[in-house]
Image (cartoon, rainbow, N blue to C red; front, top):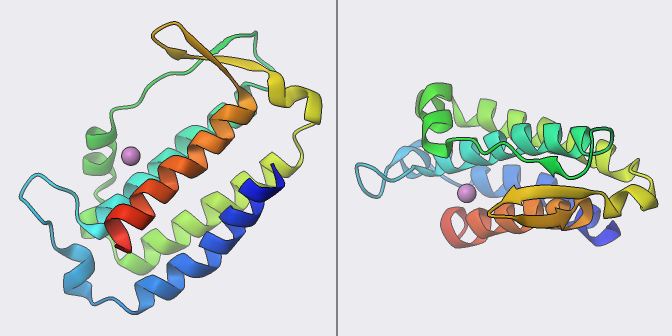
Length: 148
Ligand code: NI
């Protein structure tokens, strides 16, 4: 779990640095009409943080397995209107959400890391898996789409 926390802390430093080198056009441009801009991808990562923060909290006290509620990613990005918000505001939101997530993760007692959640399709995973998957999903978007 320490490596997840170290990685999140590194990204909190790196993401604002990397974005400061990009132009407004670069962060706002959609590669295709229906594809997200870099702003919107970072917004999607805010939505992921919002939804996963709730999961990391609820799994700790709800009945097991805790059933994950999916969220419609395109609708969230659209309704939150990230394309029309300044990149600074999205970066601040993303940093603050992830700082909060780190604070929650560091306080999870070791025994709770094996608590179970149902991720759909009859797949049951542990809280530890869910936290690692959160980082993996974030790094996929950062490495392959935003900072490629
Ligand atoms: Ni995604």
